[in-house]
Picture 1 (cartoon, protein in one colour):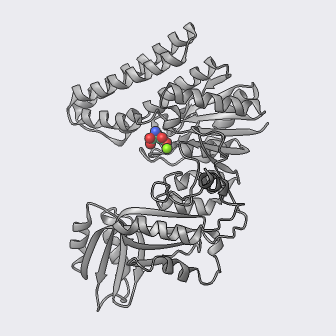
Picture 2 (cartoon, helix red, strand yellow):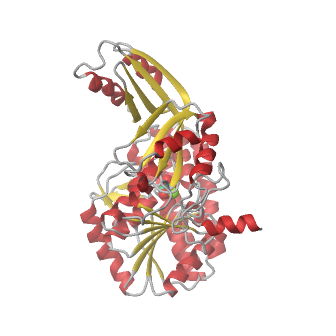
Picture 3 (cartoon, helix red, strand yellow):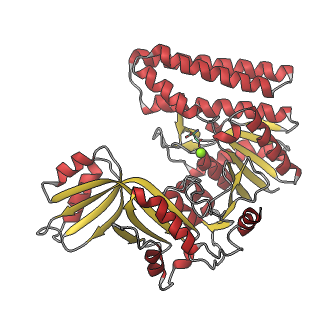
Amino acid sequence: MSIVVMKFGGTSVEDTAAIGRTAAIVAGRAASGKSPVVVVSAMAKVTDQLLRAASAASDGDRTGSLAISARLRTRHLDTAAELVKDAGEIATLTQFLNEEFDALDEVLRGLAVIHELTPRISDLIVSYGERLSSRIVAAAFRGQGIAAAHADAREIVITDAEFQKATPIDALIEKRAQEKLLPLIKAGKIPVMGGFIASSEDGLTTTLGRGGSDYTGALVGGALNAGTIEIWTDVDGIMTADPRVCPDALRVKVISFEEAAEMAYFGAKVLHPATILPAVRKNIPVLVLNSRNAACDGTRIISVAPHCKSPFKSIAVKRKLSIIDIVASRMLMSHGYMSKMFAVFDRRKCPVDMVSTSEVSVSLTVDTNASLPEIAADLSAMADVKYEGKKALICLVGEDIRGQNGIAAQVFNAIRHINVRMISQGASEINMSFMIDEDDADEAVRSLHAAFFQNPDPAIFDVEARKAASSS
Ligand code: ASP
Ligand code: MG
């Protein structure tokens, strides 16, 4: 029995057409002899709208909040009616959806009275997205002749009680997945469950943090020792650069976990870095695939990537950063100085991305953060502080830069017309990053891409697509 966990993002279940495509993809996997377990996100934009309803209610805007919920109710009911034709099935589903929305409206009304949105209530409200989408998808699959069985993610994915970003408890998830999912799979059923949502050991609804459905996919895949985890999204996979910036960008056919995690951290939106950890630990390959272009092979993320002739796999960009220069001629190298300085960032809950020091100064980069003026004020007791926004970090990732000479010279030669503010090569030795003005970012990406992806290794990159485009 070869289990494949198939996770479908919001755009893959956003409407009747998308759910229809998703059903065909799952049916195809089942027909090829695999045992799929399906994990779905909320329908596209639903999570944002639920959060908006929650904040409207807690601001006392009862009418506005209930109006958002009413629109969501219509959207879910309409999609269900379009997809599910069996009279008994649609009657049950409609009743379920109405009961869920009635319950949600009760919570929103209560919130409008108490005016206080706690993380726990926020998770409860936002959980409706996946609760509803997973039921609709399961019923729609049955309508397409797929033996789907809905499974409640909150009975399987058990976490601590840190609402809004709960930590999974692996041993419990393994036990629950084997108790709840394996019997379904063995009976020839295809379990369909919501991503992102979970519950604490006490049975309170929690969530894994925004974008957490990929994480659910990897957790369930790990718990069931799946053969593969497929992340179905709306792009062809991991690209050598953002195709909107660089029309020449190529699909990366295979990449290592470490490279993918590095890129995700540096702003490549395809995958959340933590999500692949449960897969890495169990050495389960993760495939990123496009539900709008199912024939494309996507990107395969594996433990050890094969050797690549090009030093880099991809160029990622993180924008909207600020740089902070701290100059303290007398105290900088004195004992305890760095820890006092970092304590200031910590107190303001401001994560630091990159650090570079000299004898008398420290430069740091942070996500543009509303608390920068306060941080600067706090630090001014210790040093002279300047900060500047609108910066971008360009990050080149590739395992094959390890131990190669002359790469840095090639990188900076390619962007010699651009002013570089800060440089770092991480301890992982698989990324090189540098900071420039945000306005220069697109130009830097294009120049680097032209320099490093002129003759891409056909074993690693989809060069066929480029050939097809240039000959047409
Ligand atoms: N629906 C959740 C979100 O939008 C989780 C996910 O889509 O992965 O953040
Ligand atoms: Mg997502």
